[in-house]
Image (cartoon, rainbow, N blue to C red; front, side, top):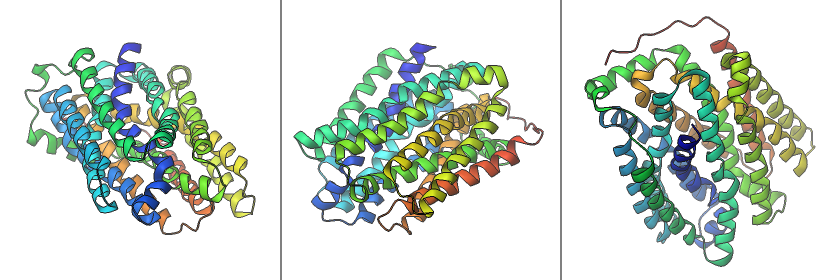
Length: 397
């Protein structure tokens, strides 16, 4: 299990690496390209949107062709787009290549979840997903520090050259370390018609959608932080890029540290009960933070401390919601993983755009958006996990 966690985690982390590594450089990129904060944030939003939409294609392809071919294509596309970002002469070109880069990155974000479902279900899947998250933590913990280090000795453009190298290493890892987990005989009935049928099945499954959107608003809170934290922490609180990277890593450690408890807690209390507890704790933490900020308690350590608590609970919510959502859809795991990723990424992009309308240079709009995500996730948790499950049959393969 550990071997697969390491391989899948490293393949999955390439996309988030492309997000987290250039966060400390956002103010520098804004100055260098003579672009507004909103325009630079547009490069982040373009990445999220393309990652979300692209998964709708990769998921069915992973069911039809096997898990490895879509990963090869995505990594090659990601490497080429990284070169385009490195050479971008203006923010419009950067946004365009970030969109293409996202189309490549999403393969590594949707297919590994399907591989987990190929290998395990239930608590075993939760354990593997949590181990994958532990490896996945390399991105948000080390990537901002790596980005700061690269910009200290070179320019922000070198970050994208490093992303290209990461993609090439991912191709080698895929070629020599990961076996195909969807045998040819399981692909026979997979095609365009079955993909459409699968999406229609999933869109009628309210339990699946409820779990997906619990994860979506949990992830949206993190996306809001991604889009705004460098400006808030560096410009509002006066942190250096290195200090910002360390502050960012603290919350990442909380998220991925708590995620390792999923398998153990799920085995003892049941995954649904763990979800209800975690989504409640997350909502309480982030709403409390927003109320403190609204009351004028605008302290850096208050922000970091409460987000540390909230992200710890979020580390239980996101992998558990993914396992529960995919558990009954093993026959179309790639398609289900794709729809999950698309809905979550698009939700995150929308929430980022809404919060962006209220940015005023302080932390309050950011934490208010995070609190709104917590309230919605909590409400969905009560509606989804508080009633009996009605099973929707998957199409036969």
